[in-house]
Amino acid sequence: MKTIDIDTLKKIEKIKKLKTCYVTTPIYYASGKVHIGNSYTTIACDCFSRFHRNLGVDTYYLTGMDEHGLKIETAAKNAGITPQAFVDKIAEETKELWANLKISNDGFIRTSDEKHVKLVQECFEKMLKNGDIYLGSYEGNYCMPCEAYFTKTQLGENDTCPDCGRPTQIVKEECYFLNLKKYENKLLDFIKDNPDFIAPESRKNEVVSFIEHGLEDLCVSRTSFKWGIPVLSNPKHVVYVWIDALLNYLSAIDYNSDKDAQYKKYWLNCDKVVHVVGKDILRFHAIYWPIMLMSLNIPINFKLQVHGWIQMKDGKMSKSKGNMVYPMEVVNNYGLDALRYYLVKEMPIGNDGLFSWDRFIDRYNTDLANDLGNLTSRTISMINKYYGGVIKKVEGINDVDKEIEELVEDVISGAIIDYANFSFQSALSKIWSLISRANKYIDETMPWVLAKEKDNDEVINHKLQSVMYHLYEVLRVTSVLINPVLVDASKIMYEELGLIDNEELTDLKNLKFLEDINLKVIEKPVVLFKRLDPAVELKKISEGNK
Image (tube, rainbow, N blue to C red; front, top):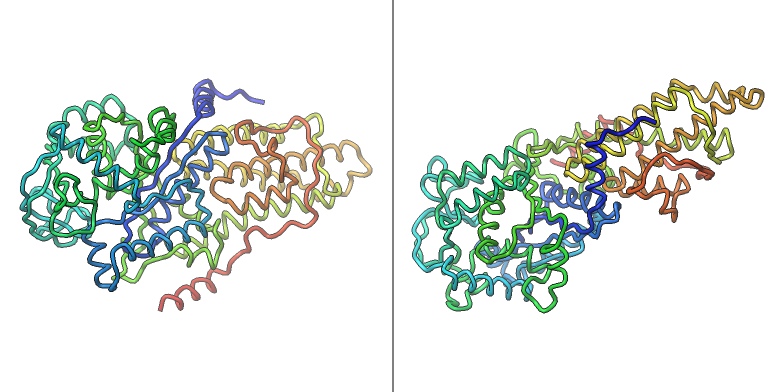
């Protein structure tokens, strides 16, 4: 067995020493139905959380709903119900969706929760008292869909919003401001001293450039609508939705309360805190949020992982284009694992990903049905046919077997490092290189030929047993490595390989080729992924979209 290089060993050792992890999605705006773009973030965070739990890391996964603002107030009025009733309905629908997608979140925070409201009011008053928030007046351009103010230099052509491209409106009102200018240099120094604060590098450079061009103090209250958290000392003002929303990461873990054990565990003393956000809300998390923490004298103990958007062939998903894709539409027709696999496999770090039905079907057939599905069914069927379903390790291996073992070792270490760094696309590519090599290994060793002579030749029988052992071990390792992503297929593989209730053999932290093995596989494996007819599926999808 070859030796893994020292640098890789150190990285893996560091990852395995983690004790606690706190991972968050942005809290989603309670204005409508969740599409696959929102689902990507939630699924990616779920994969990240499951991976860390599989390593034995005490992990807290938070998601939730951003429920205040003029847009919600307007939508509720148009629906003829109160804002609270409106957001209650959206929250329940979203919780149901996450349950259907088997999202393993530990917390679901809502900005209308009493504990959240209380904390936002307390933090606002604290920043007001220390002079970082001050009363003034604002006249300028405001984007209602983004709930954001912009200076003239930030606006797009014809005074459009630089984030969403929609028209802005002139707003004039008394409001409170957060003194961003005071913290410009301190924030730049922090980013310089913490080069891994924002990933990927391109997004960090974008933030640094924005700060270096000079920050404008941020309007942090409104008086033109009521659906928000009132400022305690001046109740005619409600707290600006983004100041309100960002504090969810602390209110969810009981910061500044009598029960602050979670805050101490998952923030103050946490080994790994990761906020996962889309590129459209980078500025809020990379500038406003750390400045708020500086003002509140709370340690900036988090990293930002920034991703792009899920695009369609004709651009960004939108209701007006009629190109929206909803997660249950995919799950009901092709299964949960197909959706989870496609989204995390197709989204490159930091850049936009493309969702197309023809690409989806191709991935399904090639990666899931042909590669993983066929390898599983062929291997289990051969073990049953040649050895009555019993798999044993044999001594002595040839060069091809040794190559397989070395590849398994490389893939395990590489996938662990990739998962830990939110590089799911890279992790899955490594795992599939092992699956592809195992399928080629079957063609090279031709077990069906060896089986004809195994009863008459001990050497051939030994070779066949070794082939079955190595194929079994590839499947076992694969079933463990895909578990964070393919939650259903992994469980089925555990059952088929005789691994249920055997935590030692599915322990990611100590995953390696078994030194000794004597297990029995299931007699009749199920089809993990049934191959699709592309023409039939694309026609069905086209007719469904009419």
